[in-house]
Image 1: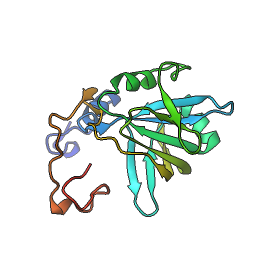
Image 2 (image 1 turned 90 degrees about the horizontal axis):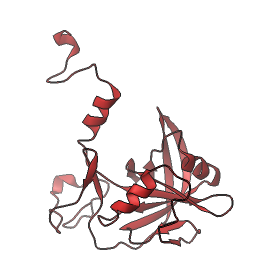
Image 3 (image 1 turned 30 degrees about the vertical axis):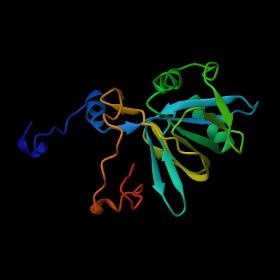
Image 4 (image 1 turned 120 degrees about the vertical axis):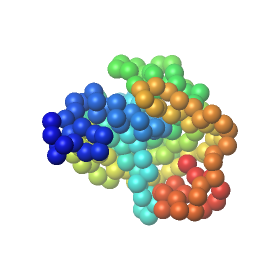
Length: 193
């Protein structure tokens, strides 16, 4: 390999495992995306590729694998609920992150205003309509319009980092700096998520 094909301390030749390891350095929250199937049964999957996208209009995005059976149900219904997991919900993440048909057998939930599954003890939830679906390689990029916001619980988030779960070390969020005002979740106060 010549110096022309390498960036500073980097490598332009990598495989999917190396790419996954590099992307694992970015800490994310963990969500469970839910909906109801045609028979009214609850369906859902764990998703770490979720983000707030726009304030006006209120949009979010998530990225399901193209082979996801749960995504196919969401695609048909056009509705979904994002459940943001707390650090006490590793078991919930494990259930929804594994393959299986009856993921709700041991999970308590309540219906959102549209009847979608809201997982109990989640930090918050957002009920959405599918606005747009774009190709994203082996995933879809799904944009949803937020319709209803759930109550926000005072707890710590469940985080995923370097292939494992992580929780914040201290109960207080470090105050944000003024230069972060362009972050989508900036509150203008002394905290941001």
